[in-house]
Image (cartoon, rainbow, N blue to C red; front, top):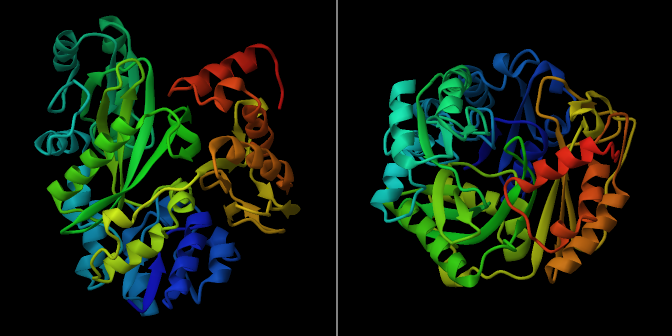
Length: 454
């Protein structure tokens, strides 16, 4: 691998460029008309324009990406996260063009991207899954029959879904009948596939994911991350290790993730996501993300392993250079997603030009961002502008350091969620780690009802 094209933008493109530079690999950025002067375009060795600002006319056009790779002399393509990163057809198109796709093979992406098939693979590997339908349900009648067998409440989920779209929690049959066409329609619009499946809704659940690395033959885990603090099924704060599981669950869950990777011959970095029942201690596989995750830095901080560099090495044909016995965790890390949104106006996005930015620094503070004075926060893309990631020798130290780091962050010109994240740090339930997947939304609802302003 000599020249790498990054088929993405924003902070993840910057992150990949830096990892490639560390390995002596030349980089090619792609940029829409809106991103001609963006940070990732300025950092790369070469930049190729791929079309107008809307993602559907640029970053989501496989032909434009493959053409840019060929024209720039790239020999590999890294998809980052989002956009085309989990499109099996894109991975196949890259391979068909004679280029290396930095990720698993197209058939593995397709297999694990389909939630129903992924559950079947997990079951074959002896990995526990949430009780529910083994196959997709095509219509309301089939959904009603399945729910009667599973028992309410149930979660209705898109078979080809991701990012929290096409999901509904229903308490009874009447709600299911009303929700099914809405969820199916949303899934068909977002993924081109309206199939749904049902699973038992775990009331007191944590969302815990296991980072994995595989070379197609062997696989290892790189411990787990806590991802329960979510708004509209989008993660807001992540940390590693999880404060809500014990060593028994950790050992069993990470072993299950490795079994699953070996079952499919997984190659690259990936994440196996689980629900943990806080009441029983049971854990259930829910899906696999066949790409690098937004929250990967917390794993890097507690293990010292550069996950993006490992992706590049594996894609270049190297075998895993890390044995499971080499992977150790030290201390605690927390990541805060900072978005250009106004939390006091229902998280309304706030595009605009950055007048001034000051990023936090000091010991054990990492800020992954594309922000710079004069940068433009575009209305065409995701509102994530920075990730403030903090390490401490224990969780209490990491949280104290997080308060200092977030207090130093200044973003002028657009609204941001920084003040809300600082407010969150003062909550006792956050400080002691006693939260689940519904806690943040409950807190936000109470906050809105009482008129509290960040």
